[in-house]
Length: 587
Image (tube, rainbow, N blue to C red):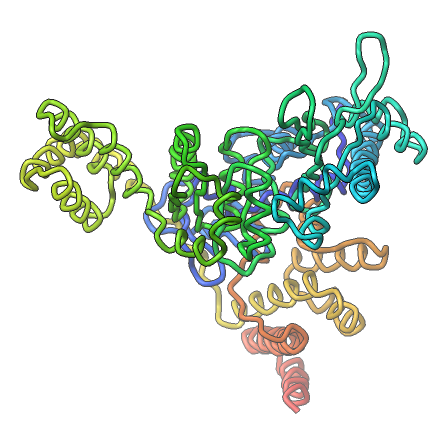
């Protein structure tokens, strides 16, 4: 049985996968105007003709014609069919799909179950909040306020408390009409071997975990007293994938700061936000994963690593540097002094002192060099030789000659090594890889550029105007409403443009969404043509005025083409009529 996925679920998955971030993991992209350009991964070429639009969430190659949304890209790049491509994207976004082979009714039921668990988690968060503000939550509230949190911050992050009872949340959720089986499936409660169901979180401070769309997907709970682990977290569920979720990213993505501060714990994040550093985020009880790094890089290319100063924290920082390396992020490492964690530092030293830490944060190269240096006793000749080899190995991988030169000077000054000796070691290493780099470059440069088909001036202007008009109509619903009576399918001269408008009008009349993402599914098998329509370079400042201008251009150029055809055919009568229309159109 073929897979069926509800349109709402497909849209959720597509919207959760930024196309620029996705394509960047396959192709080196460079900013070009409002979009990005790179060499097409689907055919060999010397000059980049592959365009990616973050605004429209589409890609198109003007060389080979490949194009579409994130789904079509994954299908082509990984040679997958639609269901497998959707599965890959859902896993990347941390969104669970219905099981293979489900019918439409079963898939609908799966999606309804997801929505029900989202609602349940929201109600659980409200329950924990009510407990926190009651007498039962006094210990938890005292703990939070003693950690320096204001009631405003406690409210903003939805913090709560679970009472020291076995069935407080269970009773609450049952009273709200949630089914016992679904409560267990959500992870909020546990069923033991005797078939007894009880609350997972008891006598704990509760930290709701949100996805980037603002849904409560899970919880972290800190023990207040008694036995048990200091922290426990929700298990993974159909709404929660902890390796693909970043705590407080739903808040940080709204920050005015152009960077993210990556920390280790919930309290680190909350304290930093309260102090004004509103772009702080953290993992969810696990070491940073590649998926979390990609998610962070999707929101900012400037990353500050603010981990604990102990050995475990520094190990985590090195792992994070490795994960961010292929994502072309500007990563810097904060050194929190005196072995303090960020939460303790901000409470004792304040926001000004933390701002100074940010200003003095080391670039990853400096951090790596210092870490290598710290491993050796540089007063010992044998260790100094080993240090020189490891340092040369690291420096040989730096792409910037200026950066390499500066760090050669830095290392030689610190370690009392001659610059010529270290440079010689680096040159030896580079000679070993030089030929392979040349061969690789030759392979990359051996493609043949495909030039787009040339068009006559009027046809080119006409096509550009029709594409521009469609872009506006599909992204500005209010403009569509105002112009829908003036714009008809007959206005469009290109068949595909006419079909796109017809489908958009059909969805509009049904009261459905009719944006580019929704419409793309109606053109399966023609994704390349479809994406090309919306990746034409058009400048749009005032959507309504631009739409009116595009309509005028379409009318004028359509008439110009008809006049040229009539002239070539020698049809004097038709030409006379068309010239009258042209005069009337120009007013």
